Amino acid sequence: MIRKLLSVAAVGLSALALTGETRAQNYPSRSITIIVPFAAGGPTDIIARIIAQQITTSLGQTAVVENVVGAAGTTGMVRAARATPDGYTLLLAGMSTMSFSPTLYPNLPAHAINSLEPIGIVASAPIVLVAGKDVPGKTVKEFADYVKANGDKVSNGNAGVGSSSHLACSLLNSRMGAKPQIVPYRGTGPAMTDIVSGQIQYMCDQTTSVMAQVQGGGARALAVLASKRSAALPNVPTIAEAGFPGTEMEIWNALFAPKGTPPEIIKTLNAAVVKGIQDPAARTRFAELGAEAPGPDRQSAAALAKILAADVDKWGKVIKEAGIQPIN
Ligand code: MLT
Image 1 (cartoon, helix red, strand yellow):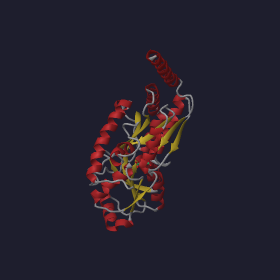
Image 2: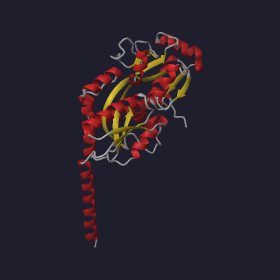
Image 3: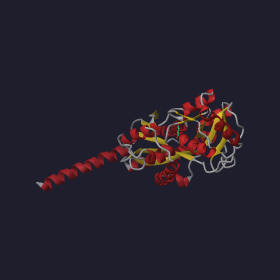
Image 4: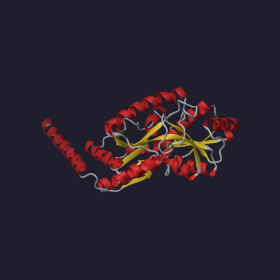
C-alpha cells in the first residue's frame, strides 16, 4: 500500500515538474505585468517604461506597467511578492524600496531578499538636490541658509518614509541643520509638478525625473549627491564640492520576480534585460536622463543579489544611526 502511494506521489511530482518545464519553455505566451511601486512620471516609472518596451520587443509579448503605489513602494513590493511565480507578474523597484524596507518595515508580509528573485539591474542614477526656479540660493550653502532661516515655511517633498527621496534629503537636511516641513507624495513625479508650480520648494530626486524640468527652466539643480559629477549635468557640483560631503546616494533600479519563479524564466528575463539595456535607443535615453546601464559585472541576477544584500546591510546601518522611523 505504502509503495503504491509513493509511486502515485512520484508520478504526481514528475507531472508537476513537467508542467513547470513546459510553462518555462513556452514563456512568455501572454502579456507580462511590471508592477511599479511609485506614481507615474517618477524615476522608477520612467525606467520601467523603457525596459517594458525593450522586453516587449525582445520577447514578443507586451510588457505592461502597472503603478501600485503606497508606503514608499512597499505596497507594490508586497503585491509582486504575493503574485503567482510564473513570470507574468514582475516588479521594477529601486534601491530604496528594496534596501531600506527590511530595516524600516521588518514586519511586512514580504521581504526584499527572501520573497523576491532578482532578475537584473536596468539602470542607475544619482540623486540631485532640486529646487523651484524662484527658491533663493545660488549655491547649496546659500540655499541651506535660506532653509534654516525659514524653518517649516519651506517645504521639502518626498515619496514617503523609506523612499530614496526621503532618506537622501533627511541626511542632507540634518547636515545643513535645516528643519523644513516634510511633504510626502505617492512618488516624486507628482512632487516635481508641485516644485514647478511653487507649492513646495525642494526635493532630492534621481536625475531621471528631474532632467526635463531642469533643462526646461521649471526647476534648478543645486548639487548632485554623488562622488562624481553627472555627465547630464556637467555644471552642477557634487554635494562634496558644494560643502556637504557624506550625503551621497546612487540608486539602481532593477527587475525582480516573485520567489519560486522557475530559473529558466529568470534566465529568459535577464537575457531580455541585458539585451534591452544595450539597445542604442535605450542607451541614448539613459544618457539624456543622467542614468547609466550596468557594466558587464553588474548585469547578472547573481550580481544583483549580491548588490542588494550589501545595500540592505549598508543602508540598514545608516537608517539606524540616523534614527529614521516609519510613520504609522
Ligand atoms: C524614491 O525612492 O524616492 C522613488 O524612486 C520615487 C519614485 O520613483 O517616484
